[in-house]
Amino acid sequence: MYDQILHFGSKEGLFQAVLDAVHAEVGRRVASEADAARDPWQALLARSRAFLEAATAPDVRRIMLLDGPAVLGRSAWRELDARHSMKHLREHLGLLKEAGIVVPVDSEALAYLLSGAVNEAALWIAAQPDREDALGRAVEALGALLEGMRR
Image (cartoon, rainbow, N blue to C red; front, side, top):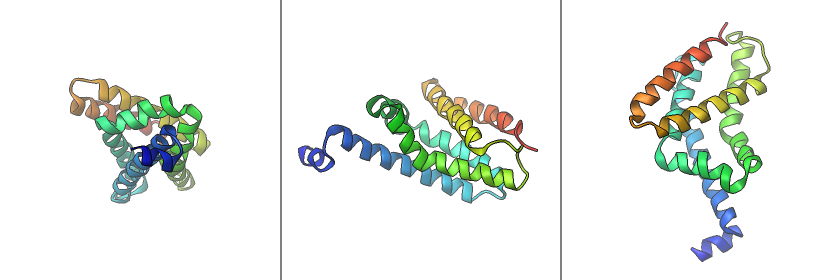
């Protein structure tokens, strides 16, 4: 363990490397689901559901949504999120906007709003006694929310 800490400079450095790996893995899972969708709109829905499924796994939720911001601080956590989930979401929303599928609003602002919504939903889902039921309810509510921005 001490060899690993020395390699990363500190416990915080080691944790940041773990968090970066978790963010990257969640990003791969989300991208895989989005890539399998039949059209860009369905890809957004698939991306959102995949994120909620991945982020509510107990170990991921703990590292990515609870400990990440607490240990590294909100700014450092946001930097990691921006490199992984947020980057892809912003790009996808930009494509939807260019294609005329969503209302013409700022893609960056919309990405932050949706990211905040799904992060909070993931924390809520994970705290529920029936995670699968809560996931279904959250996905349904998120679908309604997303439908409001569709042209």
